[in-house]
Image (cartoon, rainbow, N blue to C red):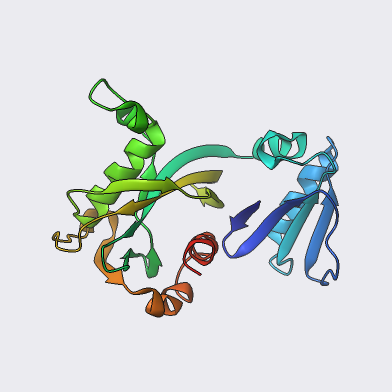
Length: 218
């Protein structure tokens, strides 16, 4: 799995990769101050383009001691969003803060499922994903078709280092619905894009979104 700090990946592996570059930073997980210092060096010095965290026990990263130790360095936020496809095979993107993005947002208390939801829909992440897609794009009806690989990225907010996990869902929506960008959230354009034109999106989006698109569309 990968976590992104801007466009710089942090990757968790069981063994060191071959053909390391001089700009790669590698650390063997161990419960010590050295582990945190390596992360802080990577964060501070942009000359390091990749960070590899090696832990032989990391068969399932999210349950490993190395991953848990790394996560403890941050405030963790849970979010959810959608990759929406229409009947023409086009995908829906928003343009926010100078980048192409997918509709997403934090999972909130209001997303706790109530009695009106079916068993299939009873997940705070699923409810949040649908709510955020509707709010940010203006769509009135979307249907989740499957769950996708989650993404992780790091950012700083008010001097707090945050690790955000976003759960993604592929969704279906009718292209005849009116689109309305959520301007108060900095979104000024919502656009259906054919897969043949996705390369324009890839060069002007976030690294974590790029990884998701390459996995799902290509």
